[in-house]
Length: 409
Image (cartoon, rainbow, N blue to C red):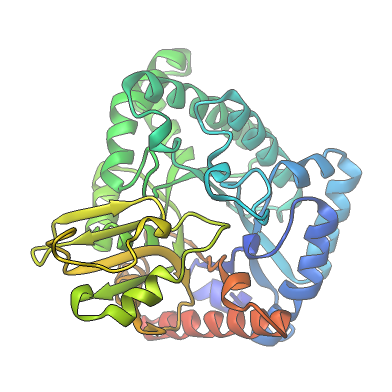
């Protein structure tokens, strides 16, 4: 947001650069030049704007030297890009021909995930502007199909704690506030706020109390843990599971867990699927080879009746005989924020607006990022670059318009 905007309301706003290739720093620089800077100029003119930078293993390796880090820091400053957040969920190639299950690797069950996330934290500490709080969003545990047992949760807690210790060391050494923001998502360890709260209370906090007992009292240890372990709510993810945005946000607040970041995103929705065969065909047609697009169906009472890991699991035709009680189907396919309809489908924009209203009115989060990483798929064909710049700029304006209606101007 503009500097004037930040003075009136402590919000940092940006879009996630995981929409662009960025597996090494050559690709990162290229995507910033070709997309991010032109978008900044189109939306904000000469003003600087916020940046959520996607950093994975490849780009982190390229930033291993202090010289590379300082050069990148200077480049961002000269380009009017204010680094306030990092997307470290996908550590491997997020623009490979097939991403799907690889996006969860390594999981938080592996020390590798902790090691690379810690390295990214130390890198970003040198690159982000002085005095800026940095949020680093990450995978919520692991893919559920790879294990959802107490033994797995104990491994997750140990590896999370390792990275959280690094973030506390960074703050002690440089004064930088840096938070890890775990991201609930369908089919992962954390699907909802309740899942995060349960893990925190039953596994992470007890482990911290044992490992950090020399740090001081129980209340001090818990306060330190809560200062670095936060949540990144992705509104699309909650919508797909028909989870109430406001209720999830309030559950976190009641449990004393901070919102490190909000990914402002829309899912697609199919209402009355038995009476909408053409719309069902549209939904099924969104199956593609790169990303998982989990789906969930509910009955008229809102009870889940059907779930799947990917759209390819949908039948060619939906019949009551096979799936007798589906009033609405939603899928984890990010579509532009400004859309109320996509083809013959609806979007979950109303849900997204509810979450925005709750966060802004209660000032529970200062980092807002929109993350329509599917733009390269949506904007296929000719003039892709122009379509991406136009589309992301339009999303910015839609979000700025929503914030203005909520009194942020």
